[in-house]
Length: 484
Ligand code: ADP
Ligand code: MG
Ligand code: ZN
Image (cartoon, rainbow, N blue to C red; front, top):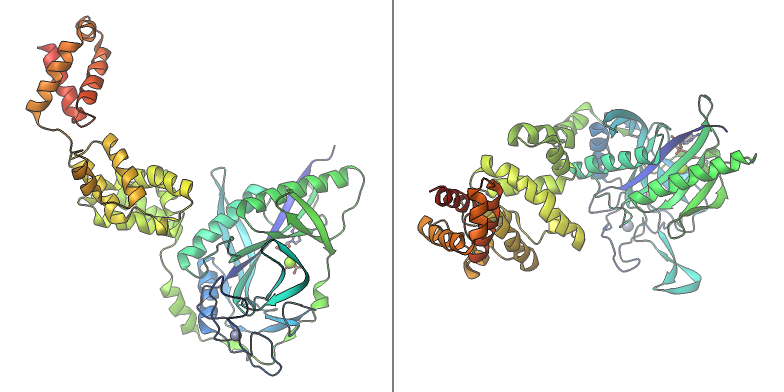
């Protein structure tokens, strides 16, 4: 049996995060009424002249700089021609050679090891409109055209065929999304179609130098979809070759519901597009200072932020990685820290609260951290209440439930429900005495040398105090009394 190696290259389209489209002033707002955001330019009226959005160019260059690309300050736009029912002018304005950015790279972490993936290019491209074949669940016997999306700015990033497993492709996209959302140059939400990924997959016998036949998979709309589609496709290709069959270069569609890829069309060659220079846009010729200025504007990126979190807040590698995996999460953490009384003391407990309790709730309720019902101020207060011994960690968890459900203030909850921890020694001594009097068996066991028997007494004291006694004090006082 032949052992095969998998070869994967990705083409990623990310919607550039600008208020207006790339060649006109129409809004890029998501989910608007059909054809509301249109004008003569983006509806392809004859003679309408595109006007380049400067912010879109800046966004692509920033993305390129963050990924170690060479920025081509001199570049042009091209028409990519095609029969497009969703672009009335029948060509898309894009870039051919050279693109705005050439030769970048991104390191991914696979099984604890770094692997650098080379990225061929990032170029600017306008989006197409959308054909509508159904309204709600009603299938139409005609098609409608919605041009809201036409001429929305995209950056298309193309990798070298250097990824070798579904997991590597997943990691690559996760890292890319993390960096791009840090930059703010795209929101990268696959659900809203703001990040789309075509996957190219081939297999070849291990050790063979020439590539196998490449199959392109389109229509993937989630990160896990990418992983599943590749895994399916690799298996399918192995079966075809294994049974003596041949693969033809083609484009296939991922059918998420069935978990399979289906043939869509055989692959047309690049020449079919008849690229030619766009006569309505002058070539770009950017001064050095333009790029230098953007370089200065780059924010702290995930890797640097992670290192800073470890150094500045003494977080573990794991905590720092988790908190910096998403810019909103990292910002929330730092906001919470800034709201807490003692940064040094609360750095670690806050990291824990965010990565466990809060994240679990957010995941369960499918809410993004940027819309967290628990504000950074409230969470800081809760941890302060634990640190200054007003409440125990255990009580804090029940307070947190209320904070999440009702966006309530922790101090108010603690006051209203009378949850303040009992730290008054005389009061605790009284409860401890009661507990000792009621538990002759545990006391006898303790005196016979079974130290663990004290646990039962602690439990009883906590129960009697409704969880409010300060556990450290309870322990100390019980031991004192038992040893007396
Ligand atoms: P097209 O426009 O025809 O899709 P592109 O050059 O835009 O071509 O994209 C080619 C993509 O396919 C790149 O990501 C590249 O890395 C990848 N690729 C090229 N050859 C192979 C191969 N044999 N197996 C897998 N991926 C490949
Ligand atoms: Mg392609
Ligand atoms: Zn327009």
